[in-house]
Every structure is written in structure tokens, then in C-alpha cells.
Image 1 (cartoon, protein in one colour):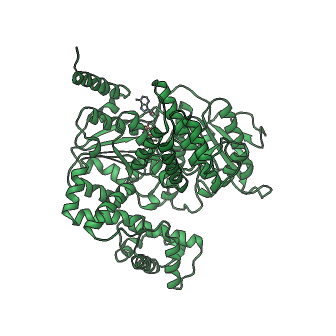
Image 2: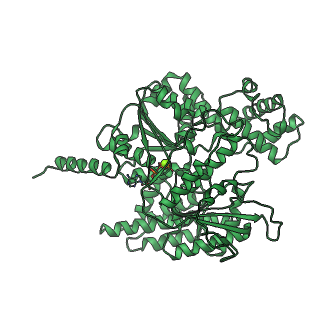
Image 3: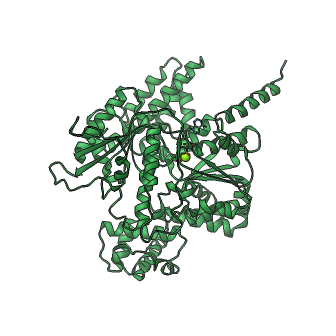
Length: 608
Ligand code: ATP
Ligand code: MG
């Protein structure tokens, strides 16, 4: 007979094997190198995130890691959520998966009273108001664009760890927003900082700066934090800023249990001060590091991979590009079977593009592609509205906000309270999924998505996610032959709230290219691929244009199977057709075999 303990160990052994089974030899090397510095340099879709999630799971399954002592870091809340879901699937749910910002904020909140005293200052959500005020005090005339550029410049200075005093030394070589004098921007930066201090506020960058300061100056706090976190994993490391690197160093405190993974070709945040330098120099900073390269692309069809490879192969250094930033790009080798050719679509205007996109999405959904496996990606947030309207009119559900701070949304807070109250009163005979719908109806839920956009829609989205969570829990319970009750849902919501573990959202994703990093969908629509948007109008230097190319590369490589590229000739219906397709598309389409042209379908000129 096998004792309980033996049985546990047997299943543990099975688990370890299962974790490694889904990896190729290089990925396996990453997953089994549990200590010391590890660096993975690899292209999109090659399994970097997979390798590190399996590494964490393997470390836990073998008892080398304690889940609570692992800190997994990434750059967007969406990516953090994705990583958390993958870890949970591997039985490593207890690991902290956060953005640098979220991890720092949590520590700061915890240590502030002890290290500094008093409550943590309020957070500035948007710099615009304070910057406008600072500019007014200086009698500087600004408009919205100027304020945005000034905010970006201040952010760059802060993540580059420059104070108003040290800023001019580095700024001399930079293009100043709107041709302001360096001295003017310096004074504005100074004045912005003073306003913030006067009002007892801190901004996004301060959260990181202050965490660094506390860790570097308060040995007791540093010791506690370093005792808490032993193993560090950083995904998307190509986009680390000097400030984030400094924070990582402060967390490590000279230890070297750190695994970084990234793809220099996907650096898309250099405008904010991020730099792939840290990734590329990691092996030099850590000569004992295990360096692993992955080239097999498991995500996308050969058709998608080919498009991505061609886009990168067409990179050319321009006058003034940063030396060394033109390393030969990785060539991805597709592993999946053939899929449909990417489709190229020209539309007369944005409205037609949105309607055409919604129609194609409808076709995909009718063909069985789940809405949650479809994304429309665009360069600027302002492009979203047209797609929201078109999808709402076509009766297709969509999600806008991702899952960021899901449990902080007012409607979700209300829903959680009401569900908890109802759970206490619920009778075992009640039908829980019906009950959930009834309760959430009073907050704005309906079985059909509202045909509107904006706040009503966003509220519905959140509530719909809670309804599907309940449905899924009920299905899972039924599969186990158990009964699902409302208190189970209440308990699950409590756990998820504590871990900021947002439920999966249904519906088509509408997102900016920047926020799509690290994610993947069966079908990806890249919209608005015209000059002025991709590359964006304000990208001027060779480096800036190259970053726009990388951004498109990130977009293309999000697609598993269907890739639809589109652009418009004019912004508004009836407008003059002055727009030109993005220059990045030229090289991509050239090598396509000739095919019939001419109008086809809903106002689109389809080229595939
Ligand atoms: P990105 O650079 O876009 O972040 P990535 O390198 O992190 O990409 P992953 O997201 O980890 O790539 O993997 C891409 C897809 O390929 C995922 O769906 C993953 O599950 C799958 N995949 C990765 N490695 C393998 C493998 N060895 N066998 C099967 N599928 C794999
Ligand atoms: Mg990844």
C-alpha cells in the first residue's frame, strides 16, 4: 500500500515530468537552471514566457523555490495577468506576478509608515493638470499637445534618474518639445516637482524612485524585502528603464538569482527611457550567466512568421541611428502548419475600416473563432472609438480596458459586496448562476451586450466577466460531480480580490499596439496602417522610425493564425484621400505573388 505521503511524492514526480514535457531542449535548459543568472535572448513567439513560467513551476514542484519568495515581473498589467493565468495552469498560483510599478507600490505602501512616517502621499494619475499649472506659473503658453510632450519629457528624465539639476547635462543632446529651451524645460520640471511636494502627491515614477530610495537607505526595510523575495524573473526585459534596473538591483542586493528574458527587436518603450542595452549587456554584467537562445516560433503560422521576418529584414540604419542598434535581427523559424495568407485591405475612410473590420470579425466568429481570441490593435487610443461603435452596431461584444485594476472598478466593488451579502442569505435550493444574473442585473447587467459604447458598456463588460466566472465555476463543479453554491463564488471573489486576479473577459479585445506586447490571439487585425499613424507622425529620427517598425513587428507577431492588415485613405467619409499606406508595408507586399486587384466586399480593396 502506498502511504499518503508516498502518493503525494509520486504525483509530485509526475508533475515535474509534466512541466518539462511541453518544452523543447533549449526551453528545458531555461526551466531547469533554477539558480544563478539566466538570460534568454529570443524572438517573438519562441516560448520565452512559456520557458520562464515553466521554470518557476519546476522550481516550485522540485521544492527549490517557495512560491511566496518568487517575484515575477513584467511590463503591462495585461501581460502580468496572462503570466498569472499560465502559472496557475501549472500549479504555481501563489507566485507574485506584477508589473514593476505594482510591485513597488505595494512595498511602498507597506513600508512607508515605518520608513518615512505618516500615510503614503496620494498618487497623481495624470500629470497634465500639474504641468499646465506649472506652465501657467511660468507664463508659458501651452496647448494639449505641448503638455503631453512636456509630460513625456519629464517622465523620460525621471526614469533616466535625472533630477532637475542633472537634467540639462543629458538633455543638451535631445530634441526639446516644441523647441523649448533646455533651461525652460528644466524650470518646468522643477516647478512641477515643487507643486507635487506642496500638495503631498507622488507620481508614477516617484513610486519607483521612492522604493529605490527606501531600499538603498533603510537597511532594515531592505533586509525584510530581500528575505521576502529570493528569486526574480523578468519578462520583456528589453524594455527595462534605468530606473527599473536600479530597482531590480536594489531588490537583488548583490544576489544573482535572476532570470531575464527578452527580444531586442521588440523594444517599443524607448521613448519613455527604456533600453534594450540592459538585455544585451546582461551576459557581460554577469559573466557566469547561462545564456540561452530560442529561434523556433511556436505561436504563428509560417505565413505570419514570414511577414514578421520580412518586416525586420528590411531594417536599415539611417543617418543618425544609434550605433550598435542594428544587430542582425533574429530570423524566426515557424513550427506550426500552414494557415491563411495575411490579408491586406484598403478602405476609403476610418468608418469604412471599422465597419469592414466588424464584418470580418463577425465572419470569424461565425466560423467558430471565439471573440476572446480576436483582437483589433491600433497605434493611438483615439482610434478605438470607431471600432467600439462598429462592433456595438454589429452586436459583437468587446473589451477595452483589459483587466487592469479590475477589482478596483466601482461596479465590481459593488457587485462583490452584493454577492457576498446574497451568499450569506442564499438557500441551497437557489440556482446560483441564475441568482448571480439577478443580482448583477440591478447593477446594469443584461444577457445581451448593450448596443452602446462608453461608461454603460464598460460597466456591462465588468459585470459580464463576473457572470462568466460564475458560469465557469458551476461547470467545473459539475464536472467534478460537485454542487456549486453562491458562497463558493463569494470565496473565490475574495481570493481574487486579494491577489488582484481578474477574471477572463469575454469579447473582442480593442487595444493599442503598445499594450498588446507579450499577448497572442488567433486573429489579429492591425488597423490604421497609414503614414502618420504607423510610423506615427512625431517619429522623425532614424531611431524613432525604427521603434515604430518594431511596434508593427510586435503587432504582427501577436497573431497565431489570421492576420489582417488595413489602412485608410482619408480619416473621415468624403474626406480627401490624402493618406498613404505605411512605408513598412511596401517591403512586405512586394514579394507577394501578384493577385487580382479591384474592389471586393464591403468597401474594401482586398489584396489577399
Ligand atoms: P513574445 O516575444 O511575444 O512575448 P514568447 O517568446 O514569450 O513571445 P510565448 O508566449 O511563451 O512566446 O509562446 C508563444 C506560444 O507558443 C504560446 O502559445 C506557447 O504556449 C507556445 N509554445 C511555446 N513553446 C512551445 C513548445 N515547446 N511546444 C508547444 N507550444 C509552445
Ligand atoms: Mg512573452
